[in-house]
Length: 100
Image (cartoon, rainbow, N blue to C red; front, side, top):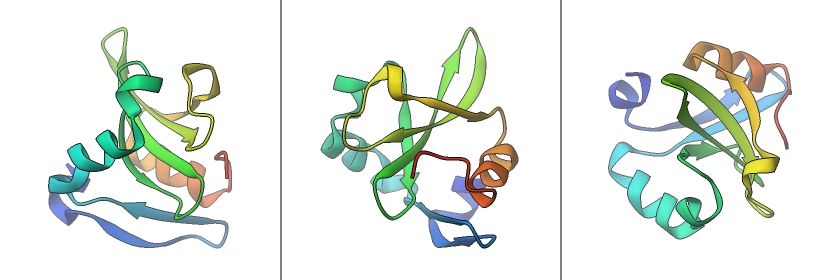
């Protein structure tokens, strides 16, 4: 819902984090360009930290889970759970608790 409302954004999240959310219309091309479906099971990336960490979501056992992944070395084993809501994802980024 947040992504639909903002259609992308970029900026600092607190003092420790940075978030670049892609526009909804760009999600398919960015996910295709990074080869997300080749490396990650059921994950859709929605943005990055502006560097080497991607942020996305997946459905695991019927529930939504936000995740982070290194953009180089992308694989299921490298996924880090970042919460079950967008607010939790933003909080984790703000607190500097992602890959990057």
